[in-house]
Structures are given as structure tokens and as C-alpha cells.
Image (tube, rainbow over all chains, first blue to last red):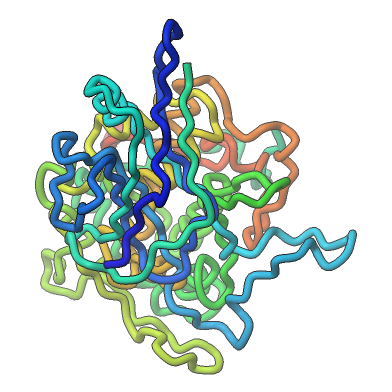
Length: 152
Length: 275
């Protein structure tokens, strides 16, 4: 398994005298979806999480995102190459390449509140890629950016 | 909204009901199987392989979410039009066919893939065309292209429960709802079934794909009723849906496409045993 843990923890969103958030989400930007389908299990403050770790709040589990994989490339050479540039000219009305990165949102409200109640000041996020059979799916988790967003 | 074309001799068009795959009457299930078996044998543009190949290989016309700025997510409209086209292909061969929906939440407590799509043989002992499909070769014979569908279904307890589905439907913002329906529910089911269903390139060749997406479409229809909104913003209604000959505006209202959702149906006419 090649998972992911934040190199620098997020500071927990806490402001004295201000209302707490009613919703907190993690947004994964630019998630790759080239190969098999998989589940990204998100754990807070659990850097040693693995596919067998229970998906329960007590075990640090916060939620999951699910990727529908493109599968192997069955096209000709270059079929799965994603152009990084703009449309080729002003009159190019085609939709973007289907292998552009996706955004995945995971609601972590309950898990984050639990950490705040335990007086934590920061949080590490760990993502465990696996499948519905709790199996190791190897090097499949790739994304560009991770954001912690709260709403009050 | 722009209405799809209707034949002029239909003074009172009849809206058909899509039903739960677990609640089909025997004659309804027989019609569905006959429809699939018939179009699975066709190799032209009326055939199952032609339509399956629009989602994944070789055409890859399908729409899923993307972060590309300036482009809206057409996941729900595209797949509604896609279901409509396959249902028409079925009905052109067996008139009473409608696509059934796979109620994941009901399956969560028990048997997973509905027996109609899982049992290898029919009640009469014939091969069940809803369990899989022999996939024809692609031009160029790319390495690894499967010759048939297969599944590796997991523990049914891992399917979405009704509470999760309700949470998604309760979301009032259409874009947030669409993303949640796709990423929290739809994507996970593709992975749960596994095999060729877990790849966008091959998923639509498996008949269970169509029951899965009919459930996705049903959830959108429920959302539309509950929030009194079609969903996609009006500026999008003229947007064409790639490869399907329809625009977003033409697929917003299920009844304008000739169908609605019911759990089950049973009809009677005076002097007959049913429909």
C-alpha cells in the first residue's frame, strides 16, 4: 500500500469566542483516476492506519472518497495523454479530456469535532487507498492538493 | 425546456414505469431478458455492444466530474440520455421493456446484486442474459481487452444504506448533490462490483451497469421532486450530450422522455388478466 499522510499537520480551526463550524470537509483536488477503482479511507491523527484499520470514529476514521477508475488504456498511442494546455484554438469547443483530475470531498465534521473536544491543536490526515475487500491496492493514490474547509 | 420529438400519432402518450429489479413480475422479467438477449445478438447500431461502447471503449463519450474551469458537470444529464437510448433499443425489439433499478440500500441488508442479474440460469433453464456479456473485439485488438464481463462482488454490508442515500438527496445545491451522488454513491458501487464494472472503459458491457445507473437516475428524479428543481442551470440546457443526440434541456423531465419511477406495477384492463 502506498498511502499518504500530511507532511505538515493542519492547524485545527478554533477561534475563541467565535461559533464553531457546523460542517468540515476535506477536499482533494486533481485526483487521478487512471487505473482501477478504489476507496480512499481518510483517518485523522492515525498515521499508522492501514486497510485493516476499522472504519470507526474511535479508530480515527473520518470518511471515504471513491474513485471510478478509467481502467487500462485500450486506445492507440497517446489516447490517454492529457493535454495540459488550453484548447488548441478559439474555436475548439470540445469538452475537456476525461482523464483530467477530479475533486473529491469528504465530510469529516464528526471526526474533527472529536479532536477539538480532546483539546488537540493540529491534525494529521492519513489516506489509505484500498478496495471494498479491504485489500492492498498498491500505488494508486495520486492527487495535487488537499484542503481543509470549514463552514460556520 | 425543449421537448424531445414525439410521434404525431400518439395523441395520449403513455408514460412507462421503471421498476425495482427485485420487484419485477415474472412476465416483466421475461420481457427484460428477451430484450437484452435480442440486442446482445446485434452487431449494428441497434445492438448492445454499440451502446456499451459509447460509455467506454471505443468511443469514451461518457461524462463524469472534472475540475476543469468553465465546464459544468454533465454526469447526470449524460447518463439519463444514455439510459433513454438503450431503453429505446430494447423497446424497439420488446415493446414492454423498461430498465429496472438496482436498489442498493435494499441489497445492503442481504443479497447484493439482485437475483435477476445474478442467477446464471432463468426459471426455464436457459442462460440468463443479464449476468454478463461476451464483449466483441476492438479495432486494432489492443492488448488486455477482455473477451467477456466478470464481477467480483464484495460483502453486501458495504453497499450504501438508505441513510446515506437520504443525506445525498437532502443536499439542496444541485452541483453539490451531483458530485455527492457520483462520488459517494455511484463510484463506490462500480468498485464494489469489481471486475469489468470497476473500469470506465468496460463497465457498460455488464448488464448490471444499466440497473446501477437507473438507480442513479432515480435518485436524481427523487431529488428533482423533493427540491422542485430540474437541477442544471438554465444556461446549460442547450448543451449537447456527446454522442447521444440530445441536449441537457431535453432530459430534465423524465415524463417528457416517457418514463417515471415506481417500486412495482401491475395493471388491469376490463376483460383481461393484466398488462
